[in-house]
Length: 230
Image 1 (spheres, rainbow, N blue to C red):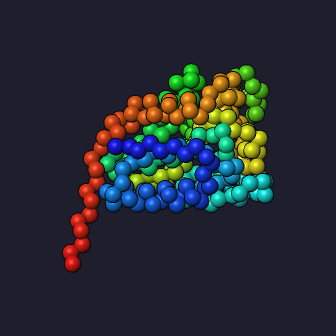
Image 2: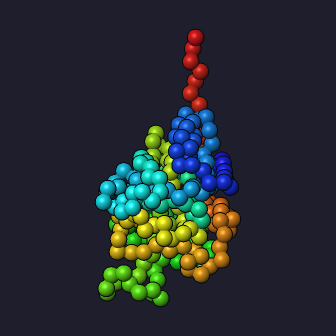
Image 3: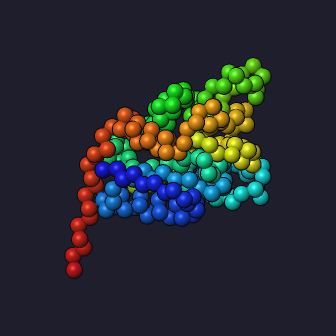
């Protein structure tokens, strides 16, 4: 059974990481259920394991947190739905590449609930929206803006960290970094696309589409370790 958890007040980043690490370890021991945690953070930047210092263009703007998730620099803040995904990848097939693809497919299915066509791009993790009505950032190429970021870590075959969908964040806050190391494309949100979508709407869509992508929420539980003999 997947526990769905939602925090209404912004959660400090360090507090969220501590909780995820403890919950992931408990899942690996067979002592806790899988979980999806829906939350917002205060404005901050995170640096994944592939982050390049030059991509932090305004280091004094917000707090910067080094993190052990994959990926490069990203922004989190109010108006952005963060979904931390703590799933037993070991019980779900032990295929990391497939799991990452499922995460992207989940975002795409969620966006489709609002008639938004999200797309994957080779070599660019995350989900993108084509913007023919906008001038291109690179001459001769169609304008594509990123609407969702993805970065996960897997330890003992349990995932944590996850994804973020831009619902109505302040898009100017992305200006302090090169998001995910990509400078040739922009950033957008559901509201920027002209859709009056709320965080509540996105939460409902995420829950609705989860089993469409990941299958049944019921998976074999890891056996609890036997009690130590005295």
